[in-house]
Length: 366
Ligand SMILES: Cc1cc2nc3c(=O)[nH]c(=O)nc-3n(C[C@H](O)[C@H](O)[C@H](O)COP(=O)(O)OP(=O)(O)OC[C@H]3O[C@@H](n4cnc5c(N)ncnc54)[C@H](O)[C@@H]3O)c2cc1C
Image 1: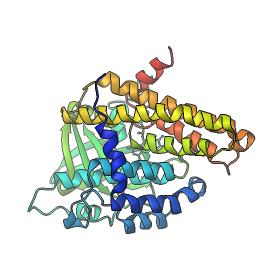
Image 2: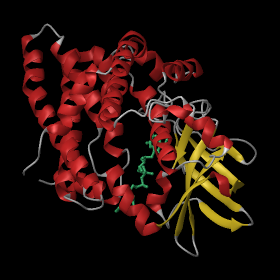
Image 3: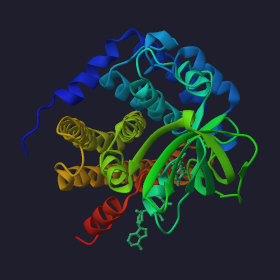
């Protein structure tokens, strides 16, 4: 396999960026020491205020919205840092951030965006996301129906992280008759309510809930895109098929905790796995960037899926090693070993598409 290692190098180089340095300092001082409590009690509104004050709710937005227009390598590094320090905070924040980038790209120069989109771009509003049910169409999805000047969205969103902190959601719904996927901003108000409790076993502090949309009216100005199902599935390959920055942020934290253990055998586990994880990271970033540059879709899909499987297996192995190393303490709520092991379980199912499910299970038959 021929790949230039420049993608991972650019992410490492982003450590010199002043904003990345500020985020790193905050993550070590505030997020990491509080990660067990956050998993137990949930990401707080005060935590979101801190992220807003740091500029982390709109760092991808252009300067006219008070953002920094940060480049993709620095953004990747920030995802590693936040996920490595507190995976629950990362999950809530990560539902919001990519949309600020997408809204900024879709805004037409000189044409005002809607008031809600502006409040997202300035970081005033934290978005949640309800987009994953499109993967299960036609078995389970949100239905979109055209009305005068807008859409009616109806159905149950299976997973919304950040519930109670979000003022609006990005929802992807399907118009059955035309097979159109309508992605729109939905304000949390009348007709939007929490469904049955989920009782999560992982990312328990992420405030993830089932959310019911009861025939909610959405004006055209809140529609972000209208795409065919085929185009949406093509775009989803880029989201679901690659090992991404949060995998490597979590891995770095687990390797660090293994290495900080006095037992030389545990240190040896860290020394064995660190170069393996570094190789997977280098390959994952290079493949994802190459796929994006060549228009996305199924570009080198088998290699990308194999890399995602390898990343999940590496996380499973190193978090298991930390549990073994910490012995009985690993299974009390006060030990980070159980927190990281459960976060690694979540990584195995997050963004799961039919392709990633198939690749993971096939690898386990070998
Ligand atoms: C804690 C948590 C928080 C989350 N937060 C969010 C969020 O904030 N926003 C958001 O949009 N999403 C969120 N998700 C969704 C997450 O990305 C989904 O887990 C992922 O898309 C898989 O969906 P699913 O678990 O509902 O599985 P399913 O939709 O049941 O299955 C996933 C894929 O596998 C295929 N499949 C399932 N069963 C079979 C089978 N027997 N044979 C062949 N193929 C099969 C399906 O067709 C589908 O493509 C969250 C999930 C979790 C667990």
